[in-house]
Structures are given as structure tokens and as C-alpha cells.
Amino acid sequence: MTAALAVLASARQRLVLADTDVDAANLGLVTRPEPVEEAEFRGARRPQFDAARCRGCTECVRACRFGALTGPFPAASPSSSPVPRLDPWACEGCGVCTHVCPTGAVTLRDVPTGTLRVSETPFGPLVDARLEPGEGNSGKLVSRVRSRARELALERGAHLIISDGPPGIGCPVISALSGTHLAVAVTEPSLSAVHDLRRLLEVTRHFRVTVAVVVNRFDLDWTLAADLERRCLDEGVEVLGRVPYDPAVARALLAGRTVVEDGPGPAAEALAAVWDRLERRLGGELGEGDAALAGKHQP
Amino acid sequence: MAVSLTLVLRPRLGVQLLDLDVEEPNAHLLLRPRLEHSSDATVPVPEVDPERCRRCGRCGEVCAYGAIGVFGQAVLVFPELCHGCGGCSLLCPSGAIAERPRKVGTVEWGEGFAHGRLEPGEALAPPVGRAVLDRQDPKADLILIDAPPGTSCPVVEAVRGADFCLLVTEPTPFGLHDLELAAEMTRCLGLRAGVIINREDTGDTKWAERVRGLCAEAGLEVLAGLPHDRAVAEAYARGRPAARVSAVWRRRFEVLAERVLRAAGVEPRGEVTGHGEDDSTRAGRRERQGRHG
Image (cartoon, rainbow over all chains, first blue to last red; front, side):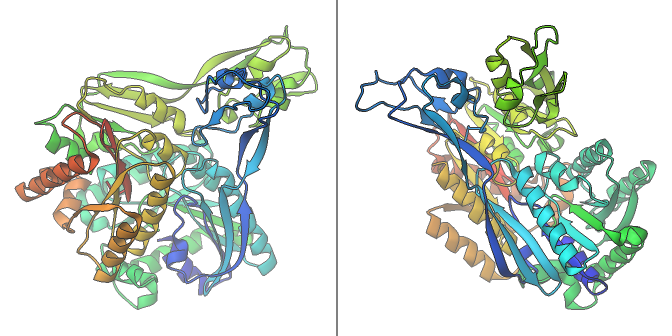
């Protein structure tokens, strides 16, 4: 969905693409990116232990709230001090262990947890990232993606940044939504999707982000779709359009492109209508426009 | 996926389903369990006694999240940034900092089911996931855990310690990409895992072959390939799980459940987790399941 709208937008104006789903970035799978820049992201801090100083007192183990350190340890001998064992998956990098250590044996170091990448695509530069599996602090990496996209937009004179949002309502979503001009929530007529949308709308309201909705595969269940749109209207949320189920969408994705590049068809036409409406909606704001799209299933 | 497995296993085993997708909990919409109990999921956050505080600023120095600090004569706390490590209260030289629980979500549970809901506007999902895991029923024969999508901290919280991880994918570039990441995560965490290929008959066979190729390379057994069926999508839209769509679908899940239990090495006493499109379902004493579950 994001990629299709970006393709349509790129025909009319300069833009920058950003993929803020750093857990599973997939905008690059359909935009034919040529990577031009890659930078390491150090998003976590982990303790390291100086075996020469550690006396095995286990102060740190007892102070750790996250159960990331284990002990007790065999009595320390001057030659080989056993140090606590770290479970990196449980560690939150709070550093309490460094502060409670009576011998200064624990220090924190920054560890790489991901990669930030810039690529050129036929539709504009793309900023995406890859968080190492199992790592936390994805919100910080999302902010990094967005600030790099803003730099590129300034450099290239682009007035629009289109971001693909992460699923959910937690830290990466909040990070992707903050300060965006318009969030586009992609939903479907299913009880689960409606439930998810409701929760997302609570988040956008909480952070005062303007939101509009696109109903994907609306013909999966006409009754639910109508009900969904009525509810959006009741809440004052604009429905930008509805996109029908169309096997051409999957065919295009399998070939590594978006449905709007494959000529006319039900989904391609519906998406073009969505973009027209979105463009009008963004209208005056395009000075420094930045639209984030969020949806659980749609790349 | 997790709900359908739960349904077909229930006649034989005491199955508890835990929905750990606390950002977008959906399993209850399909399973419709009775949620008889609820409690708050909380994070301990600092509360400063201004009488005792000497404005030394130690709390601000030790806080890794910028959640507390002394600004002029004021001590400010930003509870929504706090991870609850307890460092400030532990290290305050004047003993001026106490902790109070701050609600970040809700856990609801009933017979054979528990889930959590992250409060909209809150950023930290893992504490809510941990609170759901606290509801594990020691008397259950099998605990199935529906994991959130992705591979970051909330997912790790869901799959850590599982006996078996069920990865649900699709034969598309996206499915392959997500499966690569999920497989790397289970490898890093040292978890045993197997794969379900959903909608295996859609698209061209090239992607299905690539998915199977990746599984072979990563040593992941493909436990099932499920066909695309619009009836399943329509039923799901209405809150009816796949295993309840028809006798054929029920049978498919029975066969799948059997294979999952065998792959997980679960005697009819165990736990399985699923992780789909990134559904992970854990098995053994626990199995877990991911996104397209």
C-alpha cells in the first residue's frame, strides 16, 4: 500500500521514502533499491565485566530488576575471578549494575543492534533499517530513519516524505507517528483489523496526530466494511478510499513491483483515487509534509 | 493459527492459550473465551519526597532513559520514559525516592486463556507481556503462546524459554524476508523451530521453493503447507477460526497439531509457541506462534 502510493506520488513530485518498520523492513522488496550508504546503529548498552576487579560479591546480580545477570559464583580466587553471566536478551541497558559494583568492575559499552541504509530507487531515495533480531530500542532506530529521511528531503528539495509504518501501537509506532502531518491507517473489514484500528485511533488521538483511513479488500465482507466506514465517519476520521481484493496485487508483489505499475485494474484504479484524495488532503501542508502509513498486513 | 491449534487440541489436552500480542490482541475475537479476571500490568516508577531530596542530581546521572532529573530546584519525573530499573531509588543518597506502580496495560484471563492489552499511548509492551506470562497455568498440559509480529523485544519476551517455536510464513518475497529474520532470531536464542507455509498454492512456485530452500538450509522442518481459501479469509473476518470453517479444515489442523507435537517432542504434557507471518507458537511445556498465525 505504502509503496503503491509512493509510486503514484513520485510521478507528480519529488519525495523521500522511509521504512519505519525496522523489525521487518519490506518497502525495499518492491521498490528496486540500489544501496548507496550504510551505517551501523548502536542502539543498546550492555555491561562488560573486568575479571581482574570482580570479587564475585553478586551486588549487581541482586540489583538487576530484569534478571539479566546470574550467580552466585564460586568463591573468587585472586588469579581467576568468575564474573556474572549476562543474558543479553533480558538486559535493558539501565546500567544499575555499574553503579552498585563496589570495585568498579562493571562498565557499559555501546553495542551495534542494527544498520541504517540509504538507497536510490526510481521513485526517490529510500531510507530503511534493519534491527538485529531480538534487539530492543526499535523506537530509537525509527527516529534515526526519520531524521535521515528529513535530511535527504532537504538536500533533494523534496516536499513529501512517505513512511511505511510498523504494526502495533507500541514504541516503534509512537516513534513513527510523532510529528507526522498525516497518518494513513490501512485496515480491512475483519473483526481483528477493526479492533486493531480502534486501538491505533486511540494512540493517534493521544498524540494528536491527524489520521485518515484506507479500507483494503473492502469486498471481503461488505457489511463489516460499511459498518467500519460509518464508525470512521462518526469519529470524524476521513475514509480516503476503498481498495477491492484483486489478484493483480499479489502478482505484482511477487514480481517485485507494485500493482499501479502494471497498468489499469480494479486495485490500481482504486489506489490512484486514494492518492488523488490524499494529495488534495495534504495540499497546503506540503511545505514540509511527512505522511506515515501504518497497517498490520500491508507493505 | 494459534486459536485453531488450540481448538483441535482441546478435546485431548488441557491447552492454555496466551495471547502475547499485547499491542493488537486478537485471539479472543476468535476464541471468545470467558474473561473472568483482570489485573493491571504495571511498571514501578519513582516518586520523590521533596522534603528529603537534597537536589544532588544523582538520580538524573544514573537514569539511562532520561526519566528523572533535577532541574534548578525541581526534581522532574517523566514516568512514560521509565523502564522501572529501580536505579534512582536504590542509589539516591538521601533515600528520597520511593516507587509506585504505574499502570501500562491490563491482563485478562479465564479458563484456558489469558491475554494482555497495552494501554494506548504507552510505549513499553514487554512488561505487559511478562504480566501475561505470569498467568501460565501450571496445571495445563500444553501452553500455546501467540507471539506479536516482528523480531524485536516484545517477540523475544514471548518466545524466550519456549520448548518449540512455530514460524508461520507465506510464499512471497515478504514471507521469505520475514522468515529469514525470524529464523535468525530463533537461532540466536537457541530455540527449536518448525515452519508452516500459509497460502502455499498462491503466486508462483518460485517463492514456495525459495521458502522451502531457506527452511532446508536453516534446518527447519516444514510442518505443513496450507492452501489459500477465500472461505477462511471470510470466516476470519467474522471472527470464526479456520479450524471451524469446514470438516476439511478441521482435519488439516488436527494433522498439523499432531506434527507440531511430534516435532516439539511434546508428550501430551507440554508447551508450544507460534510465531506467524511472524506467528510463533511455542511447544514442549510451551510452544509459540507468529504474525500470520
